Image (tube, rainbow, N blue to C red; front, side, top):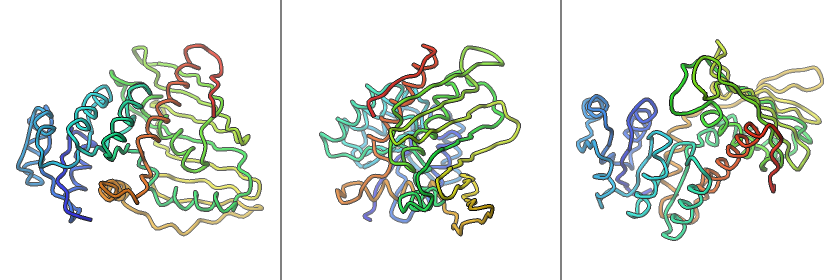
Length: 317
C-alpha cells in the first residue's frame, strides 16, 4: 500500500479515535485536521503532532496534496462536505449515516463512480471479527435456515438535539442484517417515542421481514441503564448470541452451549486500512461501499415512514 496523505474533518469524540488510528498506520501521513473547536485542534497538535490545523474544512478540500478525507462531522453536514470533497477529486470515508436522504446518497455514489473515486461509509461492524466469523458460518449453513434475528442496541444517553435514536442506532441494525444475511428487508414496521423532552424518538422497536422469510427485530433506545450491543441469530439447527463489543459469540445447540474461538480485532484500524487499500485499486472490493451506505439510508427512511404513517412499509427487495 503506497503512502497516502489523509485529513480528518471533525475531531470530536469519534474523530479523535480516527485520528489516533491514522497516526498508527505506517503507510499514512495525517496531513491535516479541521474542526471549529480550538480545543480539538490543539489536542490534535499536542497529542499527535498534526501540523496543519484548520477551522474551515474547505482549506483541506482545496489542498491538492491530500488524497483522502475522513468525514466525522455532524450528520447534516455529510452530504455537503462529501460532495465538495468528491468534486475536488478526493477519496472519502464518511461516518454513518452516509446522508440524511437517499436522494443525497445516490448523488454521492454517482459522483464517485463518474470520477473513479472510493466512497466508503463507516459501517464498522463489517470489520468486526465476531461478525465476520458468524457471516462465514451462516454462509456455510452451519445454523441451517435462519428463522430470526433479534437485535438489542441500547444504553443510557442524554437526549440529543440534532438526531433521534432511529437515525443514530438503526443503521447498525439494517447494515448488520444485510452483512450477515445478505439481504435487505421487504417489509418494515416501526414504532418509537420521545419520553424526556422534545419530539425526537429516544426508543424504538423495528420489525423487518426478509424475502427469505427471516424475521428480524430491533430494540434500540437511549433509556436502558445497561449498555447492550447484542445480536441473536436463531437457526434451524443452531443459534448464536453475539456480543458485538466484546467480539464474543456463544452457540446454542441441542441443550449445549459453547463459545466460538474468535480473536478480537481493532475494528476501527481494520476499517481504515481497508479504505486505504481500496483507493486506486479496482481489485479491492469495498466492503462498506457508498451503495451499502445509501441502501441503509433507504431502510431508515422506510422505518421513519412506517412510524409516521402508522403502518408497515413495503420495499421492492
